[in-house]
Amino acid sequence: MNLGWQSGFALYRDREHAWLGGVCAGIAHYLGVSRAAVRLAAVVALFFFALPTVTVYVALAIVLPARPPRAFANAAEEDFWRGVAREPRQTASALRQRYRELEYRLQRLERAATSEAVMLRRRFRDLGEEP
Image (cartoon, rainbow, N blue to C red; front, top):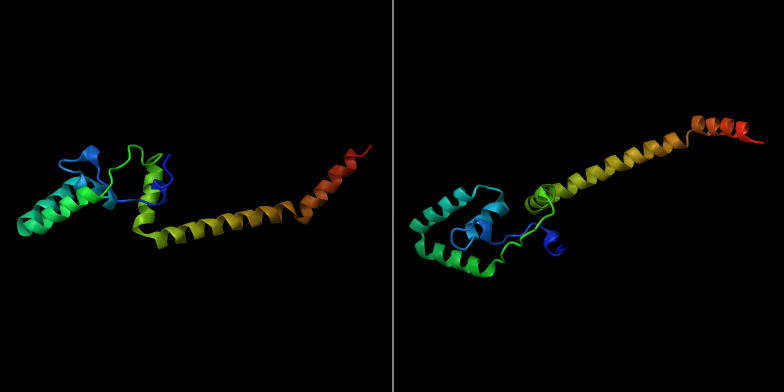
């Protein structure tokens, strides 16, 4: 498993779904939109801005790495990293909230385990076990 890859949701060329170099497919995957929409936008840009569009496409085809065959262990992991890439503050906020909830549950459990009623039940139980 490539740990460098899992540090974030990266932009890459998607050769598996490529028509030419995989740039549009990679951008679509990164943004979480349809490949057809990105390809349509590229064709429209090609008509209005032919030279810049071709230049950017070729540059991205050269610069962007190809997508690894198994970039994520499962779909849930991929969705998590996509969220981190799009809105890292929201992801951090959601994680803080989750940890607060877990801390609150742990505190309730500790209070219940160390309450006077539990201690009293233990003492009565221990009284019955003495030889």
